[in-house]
Length: 35
Image 1 (spheres, one colour):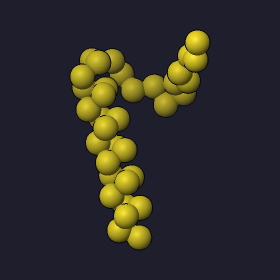
Image 2 (image 1 turned 180 degrees about the horizontal axis):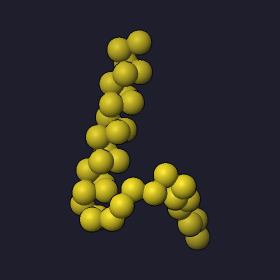
Image 3 (image 1 turned 30 degrees about the vertical axis):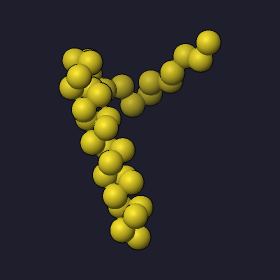
Image 4 (image 1 turned 45 degrees about the vertical axis):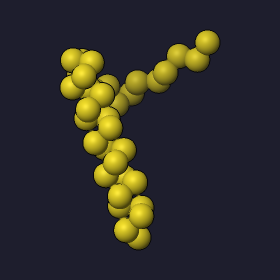
């Protein structure tokens, strides 16, 4: 259980850091374009 919570927490932290780093608003409907 603790492993799952740490994984979710880590994912959220990475998303917040990415948004702050890019300086853009978070878009929950974002879909990456694959070449």
